[in-house]
Image (cartoon, rainbow, N blue to C red; front, side, top):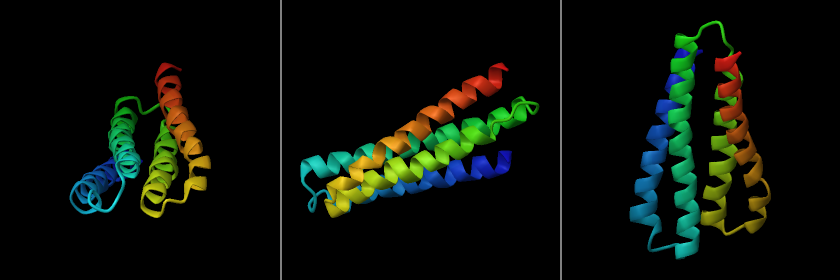
Length: 121
């Protein structure tokens, strides 16, 4: 799983950088400043949690007796739900998608909590 989470983190980081460039160069003239800010928050949190996935991969190799898999899956779910919903809100303007965004935030929080718990058990 260490290679899987490391690869997922690297791919998520690659996509975040690409989306950040897309937002800065292609979306800036098309979106309102508020919608562009929402898009940029999605990119920022995706990049943070891409590094979180890489940390999970490292933790798996450092403490092989601990179970970090749930933390990695929470980070992946958070990227999809939190960042994905913010991307959709900013591009489509469909505000009701904001109702699912906190679920992605909860997945991020759970991932960090599981990481702390797993390393200290």
